Length: 441
Image 1 (cartoon, rainbow, N blue to C red):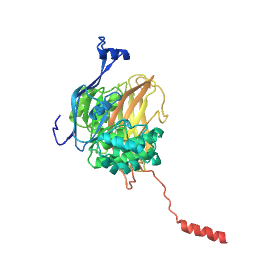
Image 2: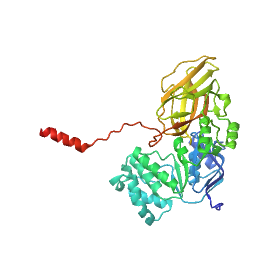
Image 3: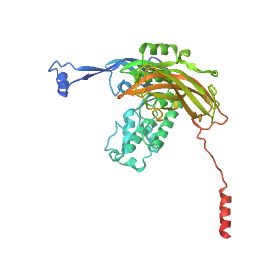
Image 4: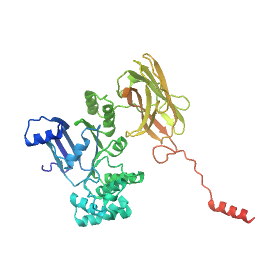
């Protein structure tokens, strides 16, 4: 296909991938040879998926297991052929799919670097220029000259990742590959990923780590059972994805939400009274066997407010009404930043605060009391009412981003929260001089 638009890095149109499933291997052979009229079952891994990724974008793909995320990446990179549809790629790709898939186990690490670089399309001179960067990144020492069959699994993925990430691509495709190796190597991987983003590289990113999706991606595509449910802002798509995870997604409601933009949240003015759920438009879902009917935040003086002083204690209240008998409901609270990254949260099961059955008609008030250790800024509170019925996880009622809070601070440290450290500085030299004096005496 000819390049359509100078601004487009990847164009996928009406993509389908169908796998034929046979009851036994011999049926597959007979069907291939035309010896019998075996009718295989068809599994539609992708169903008419279309997407456009522009140069310089970082786009995430999320979805449950079996939704087609890895399949679409393999088709874009040429590992798989589509059953129907077209894919256009404008730029050189480096793909972090199955790390080390192209390695020869008998070759040394350095020989595999040249092998992989050649397969991607680099000349020996280009690989020569990158060799030291790759070895420094992998940090496997003298093992670079040993056959990779002698490597530990950690060393193997470090080298494979180093090769893929240090070959300067125009398009980087990542499938759950950033969390390899130990914590120090993972940090190095994320720094390299951020470097790519700062350089304006095109990135297509698949991950179950919703925090990373929110942090890095400009746009998110949501897949479910081979179908594209939608695309939009990370926070918006992640909220819908969470509904899909618990079987509470409503296609028409989700479509309406996407057409209207981001979900509506309560923000701004200080709340003088408690808020009823009916008084505010929010993203909510659940079986409604029980409902959160009211909620509010109190500061350390017992005042209803959404302005909180850093370092003070505060309390989140919610009132719940039960429509049915429930074995052991779980009451949950979570706090996100304005980008949708979940900063912290807890629930009554984690805290072992309530593990009792309830009866229909009961009403309960739940309070979460804690010290405000977050940095100054704006945050969103979500509330949940869930539980287990046998082995099945149930969502009775969830309210996403139902309240905003503003943290007022005169001292912001590094990161999301304040460690509240006590720092001591002492003059070591003087102390040592005193010890010498004591000894001489």
